Image 1 (cartoon, rainbow, N blue to C red):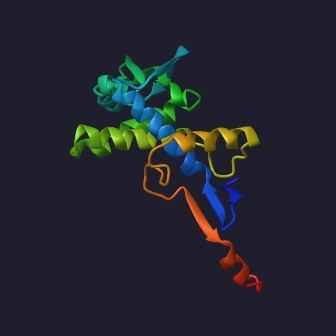
Image 2 (image 1 turned 90 degrees about the vertical axis):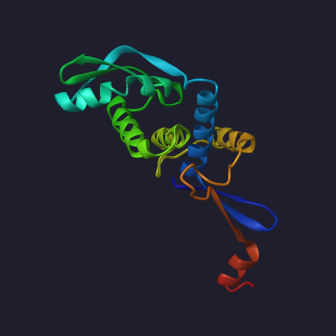
Length: 180
């Protein structure tokens, strides 16, 4: 539920399924944003997020920037925000959690350039929607993930810099178990 194991002639290959999926999702989101904005999926009915008045005002001020990132919101009362659309890549996520994480990422990146801030938010979004530790994946999902990894630039690391895979030479394994 954490790693996918593969082998080749020389090595046992350990793939971190979360980090791999996070990289693939990040690259898709980045490609969309490069094209102008992250595509979104409209909710059937707006999701209401209850907040304090000051927090609702603070988040409402980010409406345009959040929309560009695929999260469409509007103020729906003095202490409420309505989430109208979610980024399509992560449309099955929790609107409350995604809103909180995206706002935090935007605020954390405030000191950097717009590009740096975008990268930080996209990495947060990709992490939010990726396969979780302990989550089992089907053989079809593994094949799809590997196919996407083959098409992905910088596939060796997740957007936060963690390695996606580790190679352990068979000679090292044989040595450790007394067969070398």
